[in-house]
Length: 85
Image (cartoon, rainbow, N blue to C red):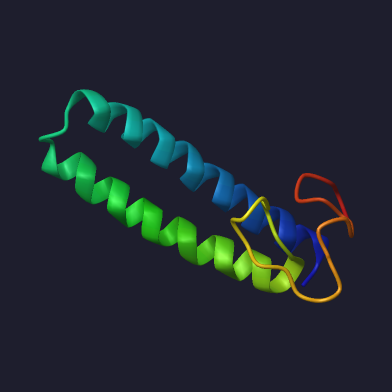
């Protein structure tokens, strides 16, 4: 995949993370809102799938116990998720 596709995938992940955080904050104040909860769960499922796809192609997005690493240790290999190719 090209660097452009990598950036597009990362942008979609960032958009879904933003939506998930906003819905999480909303649900903290409106825990009975079924629509918000359904949206949160839908966005979370999409986010998990996109993160898995990204990590399968480009390596881990985060570490510290969130993602297993293949041998050899790859976390220090570039580019970092926020860097250009």
